[in-house]
Length: 196
Image 1 (tube, rainbow, N blue to C red):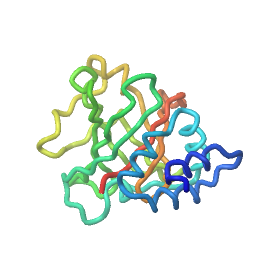
Image 2: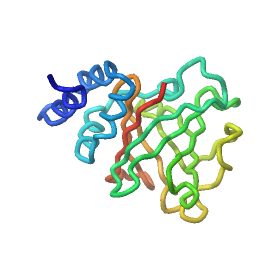
Image 3: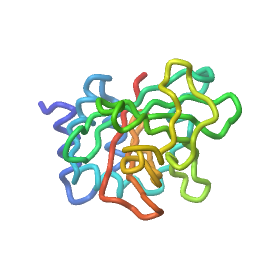
Image 4: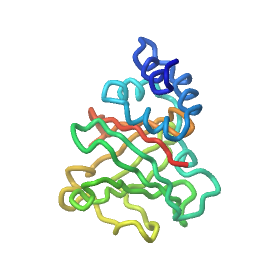
């Protein structure tokens, strides 16, 4: 009998891309199985999944479920398609002064060098995608998060500067994103798995 991860790769390898079926499969996995499956997705699988998820909206409630207090972080484990340092976390939290935006930053092994990559996340009213906007800085953050820094300082300019990630929904816990810089799509994808 095939494992859930093997079933996922079978679906991803087909000519058609049944994103609803992929979502149901991911929802039925255990936490450990889901994370392992997500971390097993390479560049081509992530690109196909992003394209297939077009039109599947992501709300701020998908990132920080309702009822979670202001400034309480929700961690999403991530894997990107860069050549190195592929594992990271996006950490989201509700802000006290906005019901439609989240604050957040990127936690990864090179954070002290690249900066925390702060952003404001909001749903795009035209596409339904979640825009993770690095050109905007949050007004507040959880107390234990690193200091808020602009993306125009130091190496952050080259990593996060002028960038907006556009995210689409795959399942209850999993979202898929693509980086856009200066308003143009980049050949860089990432998949997130929300911790519950």
